[in-house]
Amino acid sequence: MANTFQIVIKKGPTPGQVIDLKEDEVTLGREPGNVLTINDKGLSRFHARLIKTDAGYTLEDLGSKNGTFVNDTVIVSPRPLLNGDQISIGENVTLEFRKVSSYPGSTSGMASSKVEETVMLPSRAVLQDELNKVVKAHAEEHRVLFSRWFEELWNKKNYAITRELVAPEFTAHGAGGQDIKQGPDGVAGMVKVWHQAFPDGRMTMDDIITEGEMSAIRMTFRGTHTGEFYGVPASHKKVEVTSIGIDRVVGGKICEGWGELNMLGMMQQMGAIPSPDQAPQMHEIEASITPEHVGEAYAALSSGDMDRIRQYWAENMVWQVPGHNELSGWYYSRDEFLAFMGKVGELSDHSFHMDMISGKVLVTGDYSVDLTRNRGHRKDAPDKTMDIEVAHVLRWRDGKVIAGKGAIFGDGATEYDQFWSHSPAVTPSTH
Amino acid sequence: MSIEQNKKIMTRMIEEVWNQGNLATADELFASNHTSPSAPQLPPGSEGVKFLVKMFREAMPDYHMQIDLMVADETQVVGRFTQSGTHTGGDLMGMKASGRKATWTEIGVLKIKDGKIVESWYEVDMLSMIQQLNGTK
Image (cartoon, rainbow over all chains, first blue to last red; front, side, top):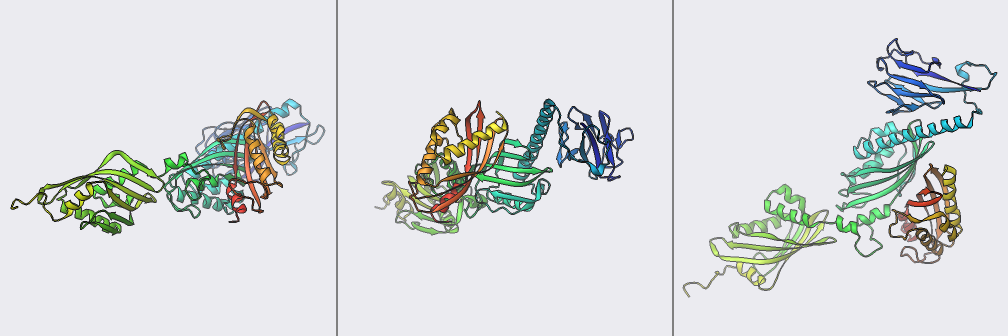
């Protein structure tokens, strides 16, 4: 029994040519000084080399300009070659690596058309050694492929890469009830759904387990829910979801996948399904409107910058002003609310200001409550002043205020009505 | 452990513990310090899986888990499963028995050290199961 090895030029200047590998080192490149010279402008002068090992040959890139690929995956370190591996060097050249096995006595140097893999009986050590190399080579190839998959497709939004990494006949099974269409476009479409719902989303690969052409991957997706996701409107919550996938890789392309993800936990994090545990979950507290967000909304309001105001105050918001004065009552839209704030500025000669009492913001579910100190004096009456504490209850949707109410405590309510009334600050001097 | 040994542990967990309800096998297969990041609220060791097996088998007397495929290396084994059951028994995740049948899938990962399961991760299509049992799907 003996093994010989061959390179078959599948694509290139001399397609069909079969080269028997005899040397321990076979250099490939454009220059005549190579063992195997292939005259194609896509190749570097000395592009790659094959090194003989006990089990066969290892392929190594020699720092070529365009890189060396095995089954469409770029090689970054010496790669043991397996029977049938497709080696791409430059755009125009593809070589196939072949192992030819024969029993003693059979015709050596058989015609290339009769190349076939024959079961043989090598020593157990050689077999184990070869097996280990194959296992490692597969694992490395899959690790490189899936690292690119996550970084390019999920994190850099390079949808075109699905054409490189996904087979046209790709089929998905499961995946948390998602309806994934077949082929590279189907996969890109599924990932786009996630990107539209979570534009800041990042996917990390937590672990990869490879056996032959199968790889199982544990991964985690983290992102902020700012767009619709399978019918769930934006919740502006931070979502963290784990998933596990199993993929079959053939010829450097993913051709079948099984997936499961914690869709239930995700729906609960987005608030679309109530959590079975009635106590607020830690991630919900972290993910809902923060006290800082409430502070930013007030800061936007006092800046007068409409772009900033639009970020925090909904167009169809309503606002209720307490008391029995000419400003009291409901305001039905952001424009009306801003007109009210303008009137407050005008009547107080822009002296009116609200200071958030530090640390006095409570957030629960859709609601926030904050405490402010409101001060000012009336225009043309500097001695007619007001200094009251006000509690505001704000209701939030999609990160914006949709409803707000003010509440004034104790004597403040009288002081507030008095301030906006036409009555003088003190008893008229004429009386 | 070899790939075959690791797959054998996965197969025993499914067949003996889940499908036959043999909880003693769980004590044999799980290390006492086993934890699952997928279910941190469950107790360590074999108690967590025993709790889940009891809950599902009491809620669904015809509960069955089928191994669709397995992938393993020397330290971990991964399985994809299809489960089914009719909710005619005890409460399940806050739901009363509805008499409805559900079929749902899962992928689980077991990390194995010295012949024992030391860590596990699983993702279950629980949303689909709930929707089938409460009649919204």
